[in-house]
Image 1 (cartoon, rainbow, N blue to C red):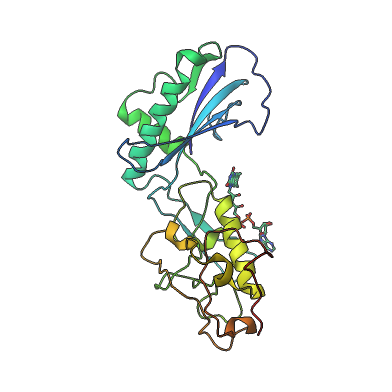
Image 2 (cartoon, helix red, strand yellow):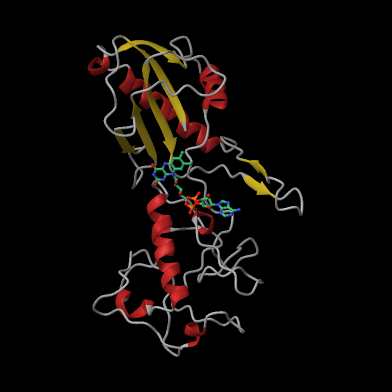
Length: 275
Ligand SMILES: Cc1cc2nc3c(=O)[nH]c(=O)nc-3n(C[C@H](O)[C@H](O)[C@H](O)COP(=O)(O)OP(=O)(O)OC[C@H]3O[C@@H](n4cnc5c(N)ncnc54)[C@H](O)[C@@H]3O)c2cc1C
């Protein structure tokens, strides 16, 4: 996420929600089939650490929804209390830098608009003097941080890098599942919380042995929303990893893979598979 910060020409009103009352999903290129950029209008100066900012002001933040740069999380010790080494490698892919340059110019276009003139005093960051390509890139390299949508450190799949299978069981470790954002095999083109909830609902159904097939037949498989070399969408997910901790999984009924629907726990068409 990058940010353009303005000082305020008059006292800012208090936000009514969470300071980011407006969010826009935009295409950085009109040819794209879906938005790839979020713009957030924030009623505070969101000054990145270490940079000078105004006492009072507003910000327009911009973030790529599906960045190409890839970071890493590595163990540095076999002591579980030692923090891992996290390297986000932000903007290391030139396509992300190009996207963020577009985001910055969109943010400046809105921030510099006539409609905001009564509120705007000065553009503090990056500052009106930052106009050349080199200076703008340098600003982004210093300014850009996370959009807080980390995913994929334990991703679903069958490839060598995959950690869990489509039933969220850790490859090679009996009786252990991972159920959180880390299993997403690719970045959803949106904020991540709703997808985490969908994964959790499906995992709960798998673990309790609910019949996923019965009530959700015809629903989309959650993996269809993801792409990538490690993504394998299976038509059925019966356990072939014996012995297994969940006897319900050994029912003869075919079991569905994770789907994107948010299931209800009871209701017509939903039944439990008995061991
Ligand atoms: C600042 C911020 C703003 C965000 N804003 C949005 C937003 O507006 N919309 C949106 O959709 N998403 C947003 N997200 C992303 C969203 O919060 C995450 O994608 C989502 O919460 C991830 O869910 P999770 O279950 O994978 O992990 P978490 O929600 O992080 O849950 C992990 C849990 O594990 C616990 N835990 C960690 N270590 C241990 C341990 N050793 N033992 C026991 N428990 C442990 C933690 O306390 C935590 O409760 C935001 C994230 C951040 C950080």
